[in-house]
Length: 114
Image (tube, rainbow, N blue to C red; front, side):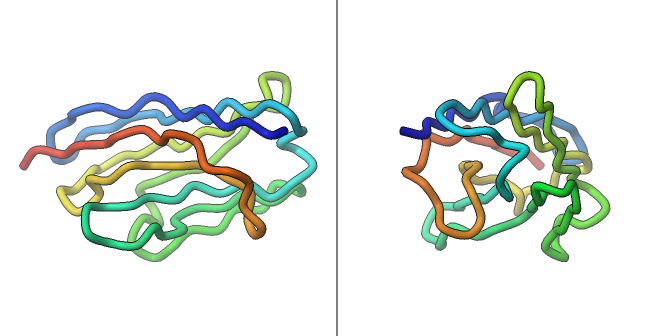
């Protein structure tokens, strides 16, 4: 059974940075396409960044140039470096396979103060 544990969120000022981590167990992250998602209050969960098993990266336009997805195969962990945070980036951030998501983890909360 695949388990996903997100961490690294917090409260930051607008323009600040965070590194989000997603520790994965039960599968090998380098063998699947992994993605980061986020869900703001009252909104649907949305996909924001993806890294394929081949290492190709894709981002939604709203985070392109500010967020970077990566993975450490030795730690079986996926990361999301978030820079230049804006108030509209505030959300709970999740990682999961894309497509065909597994059960969701608890997510990590990112709060941005203006």
